[in-house]
Image (cartoon, rainbow, N blue to C red; front, side, top):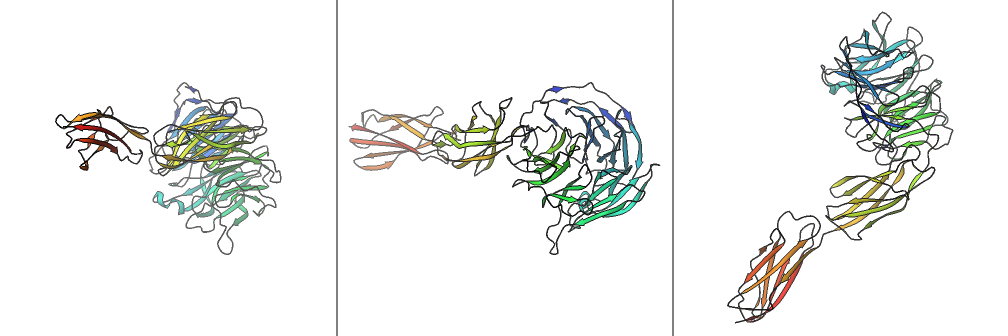
Length: 580
């Protein structure tokens, strides 16, 4: 799964569905181009610039992704609808922003959090149904369907700058389409998650008005929402507070997993939110937790993260923390897959056969949907023998080849693998794109460094569905200045009366000079040495020196160029006999 950090094996074919339009209660339904890829590794570029919610309807094999589009009260909302093959089925557009998604128990109705109410859609026809009223939302809702009722948060702020700390209420909708306050409320963008057995969880993201954010579990089976467990995580010195990014119930409801950007993956007992006796291994160094989701069949816990390079952004670990089986690992890096798993961006199909992951780029303004079918096993990959380069002396502005070898365990890949490379120098890090790995595992990264000094090359293998990412390999090259040369053609003899003409050529390797070179000319004879007028090299590299010698005898003309930041200087001399 690696077309964008995990650009492993993805292929796309463009297709177009017949356009369809449906008008109902301010709803627009538009057909969309499809994204196809290898059956076990599908990636679709999402038509959104912000992300608020992901919902999976296993009954109809549909995936819903909401673009919150907050910021202005007249912004339209968008829900992109995909099938389990990563093909976009339709797009639902609303007159105001959309922020949360929840499906009812049988998947027949999609509930979406609108600015001024709760929107509902038939999941077979995508027709708009009668909506539910709700308090005005200016910051984005979270939604969950628990105990037969849809719950939603209602944050209100005068400006977006206040949303992270505004007072947020937990409300629900009644059968008669009215809504009521549950009485639970706190500061910040409270998040909801439904679980088995009429359970619901509410978590508080870190904000300046919540030094020690909470996690709470509720029983939603009755008319009144009853909290059954609650916990804050800071110790007596205020250390260890939770930085919530996502949360999930285990399939049996007995455990809770939390993606905590401060602590990694927390595994808690649902009954009292205490830490379980055995937890999950730490995420790889450099990874920051962003999402969690248990597979419906109880096999895996998917852990999403934000990481760079070949450090995994997604790990599929055994759901049983006592199982020491190595996790399946996926890394995302680049414009084909995104750079990291978005917070709350993981959901499974009910049977655990597919994981749906929303990834985003570093800027957080582009998004991708990955459809992952976990393989039976993954195998290790490694770079062997380090990296080498040629030519031995790298020169600014001239081609450089960096070579290495990738070794794989397990079955050979069905298609040629690719490695990605970067060059880091005094001007920062530069992406060098991807390079195909040959059948024998060797590869060659071609570059043309443009700066004198140390250049460090980093090569990454981001893995594929059957191979884990390899640890990055680096190689530092000392890049020198390019050579220059001067060649002179002079007569063996000249006279004082007729003068002397010397012709020459100048050449500089590497990067082209920004301006024509100006050469210094010196003359040395029996009367001493002195500097003559400089000469500018023509566009074709030639130049001419005309001089009237001042005395008889042996005279030497020396032509030189001092060089610049990317080129070495050079000199050349010609000696001739001067007569009267």
